Image (cartoon, rainbow, N blue to C red; front, side, top):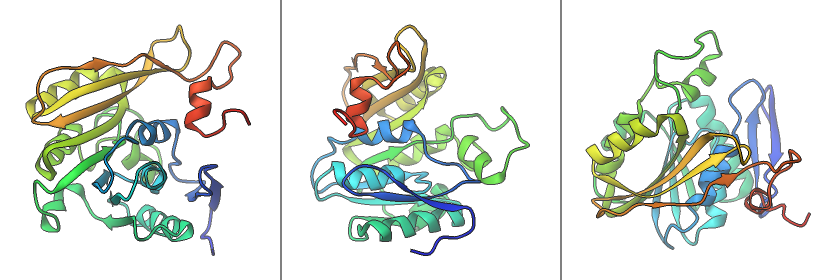
Length: 247
């Protein structure tokens, strides 16, 4: 496959999948990999939306972790959406994963409400008026709430999901109060939460959340997920998520 300037192909080391990334743009991190694993129990045959799909990392991994699902990735940046489409073609999964280059706020021009089984999202973590602004535009849109906010994503997700549809998100642990406030406000009831720590005695930096639309009360706090052991190497659980355990 022909690559554009500053692009490379990375091996995902999972079912032979690969992904195209731009070295000057915003490349995926461990958060997307963890979310794809957290959402792997989405039911067979589900219709899934990946909000803010970026280069398609979550959707690509989910095609291998779920059965007979169909994923629609929503990405506002045309260049990034193009990379995702080419990665989908590279992996031969066009029948399972498609990309819509659009703002999530315009989604109801093309999709009906109450029709989606599950939503996954790794949204921008930083509020609009926080953080450095002298960074490249693609990175700014990926990192900061300049095109849509946390509230936008949660509100739109509620409208998209069927009754009892599932919502999966990874976000910064420090924003847990904002997250829970909006989830309860828009009736996406948190059912599972797992905090992610870089090391066992470090405070959490990420949080994984599963919600159910109009779900009843009852929240399970999973055991913490530790990324690195005392020697600075990936823990066995992280190696298993990356499909590297025993290698």
